[in-house]
Picture 1 (cartoon, rainbow, N blue to C red):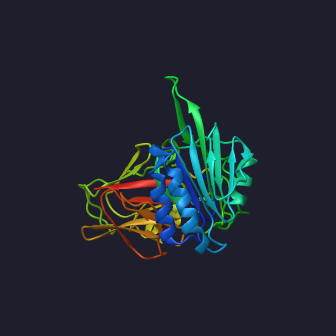
Picture 2: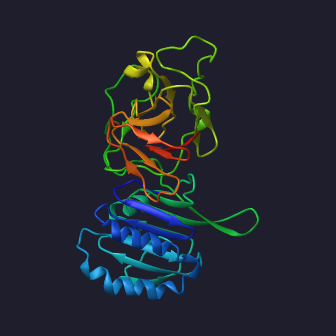
Picture 3: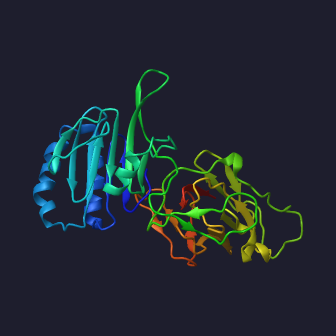
Length: 327
């Protein structure tokens, strides 16, 4: 996934990008088309029908491209300002066309595609299904150890597509001054490096309770790579959360997440306990806190300061970091 405005989705070898102005009903239709990948040849008639019935009613701000593919052949439906590169060559056909995926496919907004095309791809974690915010998506065929071909989306180096602005005033603490890209919905599926993430140990459960209300067996936050954070009370997540008022007052423990791409705020989000309920609260982060239920196809951006009830299996997207809550 390449950062930028819009949304990207993948189902097996089928890919989708749509602008933020794309109506929800159109998005739902395009997501359904991703399920036709196993019958890619038959999808041509479906896409042609959509081109004739749906496209004429769409305005110019609605832009999307959906590539329905089984990995060897595919068909494309496109509308509006959207770019598609196959093996680094632009595809400039009409609204419906046949596409042979080749070695790589890059589709999305013209700005994000242009930025990604100028960068050498850097492989990150695979989006194996679902939808996340993003300006473009790159599909790349690779050869596995067993000689079979496989596909993974690849990311460009961690350079924001928009001019960055400082997320916090410079401070005299160790490390670089972090900046964050200014986009409406920056995010994707890669996670932080657990070896460089500071997991603060929870207090001794036998110790007298503090103002933070610590408890045992309150659930865990799970990174995509399997690393976990045990919850024994309120926590503040971010790049530099130690100075947040909840931490300073002793109401919460800090959890420092490694952020090489500089997309996390110092104090990005808080996990808090309301009785037996666990909620996540966005702490007015620049790039937002997004949540999704296990079956959701899209991320929902939280309103800063408004608690969102977490349930088992719900996911959180903090900058580039995806965490799953398990009770």
